[in-house]
Length: 191
Image (cartoon, rainbow, N blue to C red; front, side, top):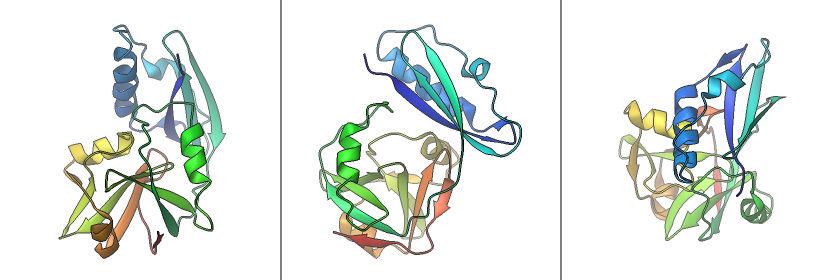
């Protein structure tokens, strides 16, 4: 069986949005028939000073956590990549995503289009501001924890987003556990 991961943000020792990571961790294990899951908070003891990426790797039998200092990557260009990739569980095996990322040419990241609709970048969910609301793909590659929280809070709605609507949107935002909801100042979309 593959191993899976949760990328969890800590700020000055505080673990952020752990309930959403716990929920996704349990969902993955439940899909393999595991009903008794660990409490992830018992495995987390991040550094007390600074922003860290807590990388929690797990399978049905074990949990391993490492801590890495974090600096946000600047994204100002996305290359549209058309693919039928399946990455519905946050796996440590990113080989297929890495191959797609390798096609980005001079862009900062990729934006994957599947079945004619946009999905995610290589590391983040996406949202667009269109018709006065923030929309996120109805079917993302991965249901991210920040995406789920913002949907629960009513900040986002789910919708199928085509390439034309993406190009016509007034703003684009990326979201994941580390960057939260990050509106890009400028973003060039290349096909």
